[in-house]
Image 1 (spheres, rainbow, N blue to C red):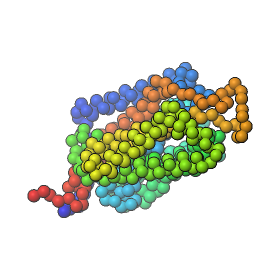
Image 2 (image 1 turned 90 degrees about the vertical axis):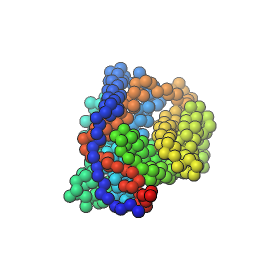
Image 3 (image 1 turned 90 degrees about the horizontal axis):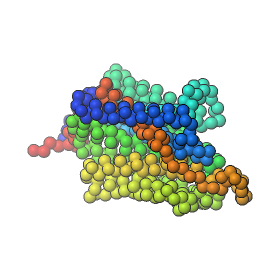
Length: 407
């Protein structure tokens, strides 16, 4: 049986073409994102696919995805320090770095899509506390500060004794953050697809799944490019945990739609999402449910498939794609269905009343969203290069308490 040993952390070597090639690619993508934001700001939002009916477009899909995943990425650190699971403790530092990077990338996309980014100072100094958006400003900034302190507690040896306490506070804060993000939609009573309390637990479950999926891929790529050992034990544990979170997301999706189907006022929007929405319906059933939910569950839990690392990595990638599809269905699909201005009455006018709204993402929107992902990638790579976030080895003999040397 393996004996307990102190985990040794070190920076990425980052001396080869792989590191600087990836760094340059992320930097170029982030620069293109800035150019796309400048193009949309100077020309106006008419150059995008957004309009008066669909005011949240593809940049918001990317931004919400990154913000939700940021909260979930910290889950690995929470499992180690808050719930005392020893196997996850060597991954806690990287978990905090990924959480900060994803949140900064998501907020960058939101700020650059405001149309007037220079007006951000108004949003930061003038608050309407009846608005969930005002609450979220505190939740996002507080999360960044909390995770930074959490990392300090973990990385400074003399502060290690406080890491559990700070970890508990960070765990509660990130639950509040994701609840606030989900409540953006849950509090919107004007949209038939929203206005439901289930959005809060749904977004919490989504954050667990999306954040862990991103974390798995970051961990795998980092270890592979820096020639660090990554054992089957930790990969399989992360894979099983991801499967549990994916199942939780599917459960809350079922609850969400069954609840809407039970209420007569929501039958129209449910028929639109589930049956008659065209690309929205296809994204829901194929992208969100099949590829982003059921197929990952098969890869992660089927005894003949979950022994393969490549299947676990593929499942993580599918969860990410399914998460993007799910957020697209929530944001774009929810706005596409016409507003019900006078329930029980038929409204006819020339102002799109009762008309299903169409939306086609433009290239600048896609480039801006990808730029946010690239910014997160830059922060992760530079962070691992400068500071000791990644363990020297995650081989089975260093992580598996039941490991036995082969004679």
